[in-house]
Image 1: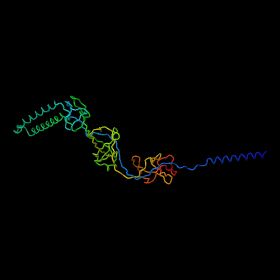
Image 2 (image 1 turned 60 degrees about the horizontal axis):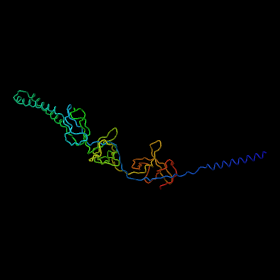
Image 3 (image 1 turned 120 degrees about the vertical axis):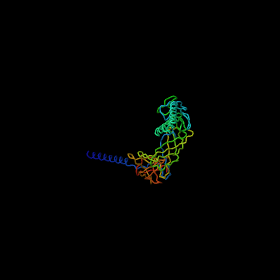
Image 4 (image 1 turned 180 degrees about the vertical axis):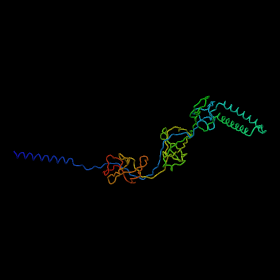
Amino acid sequence: MIKNLMIIALAAAMVSCGSNQTKSATTAPVADEAVTIKVCTAENMGMAINETYTSEILPYKQNDITPAAQGLHIEKILVDVGDRVKEGEVVVTMNRTNLKQLEINLATIEDSYNRMKPVHAAGGISDQQMLELENSLTLQREVVDNMRRNSEIKSPISGVVTARNFEDGDLFASMPILHIMQINKLKVKANISEQYYPNVKVGDKVSITVDIFPGESFEGKVSRINPALDAATRTFGVEITIPNSNERLRPGMFARATFHMGDVEGVMVDDVAVQKQAGSSERFVYVVKDGVVEKRFVRDGRRVGSKVSIIEGLEAGEVVATTSFVRLEDGKSVNILNK
């Protein structure tokens, strides 16, 4: 009986050992598989430096039509919103009642002055009294001349009327009677980073685009550069003049002004090759060499289309991965699909 029990125990042990050997064989580690990737080659390329700034299109010139004197009644407004006017054209006439009264006062002072001249010559009045009469006459003449100028108000610019705030017969208050804009030329103002101050010159061409005309660009030129920088923003103001003889562009449109700041040579790769390190602002690429990738941190620069420049960390001619980043790590074996 004891002999039989020993035989059974020995058999069970042999079965258990065989089972463990089988289990161990099935869980043996599998060799690391290579990751299939696509790549691109870093190249030395010429790179255009273009900077775009958003702004609003403004009239080339604009003017508020107002008389110099307050408290005058408007006799007639000769133009309306949308009308075109020429420089020097009369656009508003004012009531002349005040002018007539001032002219009567002037005539009275002139008459008094003329009557006093022989009296002064005969020694009837002093030099001081005669000088006071002369000053009074000069002042009244200036008042009348000013009123005459304001009785007919002329446009100082050629343009189009964009606002009319009064009607005939209204008493002029502080608000302008008319607003006139010159729009056959327009302008855009941009604030540019100080690093580009040496790159921007008067006469430089600037590409202007607006959302209302997708796919089109309008050529402007730098017409004015502010000689001082804004200390708070470290930017300088630039004014661009845009020809607009067909008047397709209008003041108030949202615009993008693109400046060409020059050309530089640099190492360029596909922008998808440059990855961001999680939890930081660092960038890296996977450099492929002898079938293995090396994770390498780089300093990237400008993006031009689908390319990005590498300022530091990569040389021209080196090959970098452009796909399968979630499966890559430093030292990983790879197969190149588009080699």
